[in-house]
Amino acid sequence: MARMSDHPTRWTQATVYPDMWADPDDDPRNREGNSPDGELATLLDFLTDYRTTLLMKCEGLDAEQLARRSVPPSTMSLLGLIRHLAEVERDWRNWISDGDPLPTLYGEDDGDFDGAVAEQSVVDEAYSALAREQAEVDAVLAEHPDLGERLGKEQVAVRELMVHRIEEYARHCGHADLLRECVDGRVGQ
Image (cartoon, rainbow, N blue to C red; front, side, top):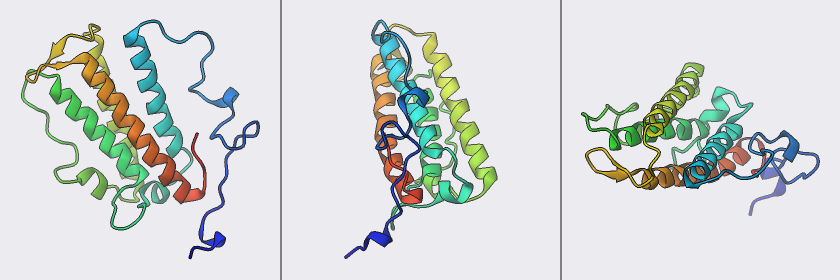
């Protein structure tokens, strides 16, 4: 039976709503005004918010905390999620390309998670790779605003890819909530 002292203290920096990650006025995902007009703008808005959420879940942690595994035998960590999403963004770029596929970033068979070690150079590279791969996919898709257009050798619809991207980030933001709480007790929002 787990004792209360076996668990990190749950905490948040929010003061207005203490069960939230950040107060609404400090949350970069809160924007003034109406929601976006149109399906593409709405999809991009959701994708941006989930990307921001992932980065928020990793804020303020050192290399050891980012690389800390959840529960054995899982290799999942916050750093592993960052690396995994960089790898997934690269894979999506391959989906929408007509050319030869780009090589994987971290090798085969969970290299993104297995190689997520507590070294600052690994952390820096992971953040850089994620930003680069996101920008590359974003740039290609910006040239194809028709959500029904089909791209690449597999003829994937832009809409399908956009929804899949949101789904992937949303799922992993849920993992990040739990991983962050295990690291220092900070709860999700």
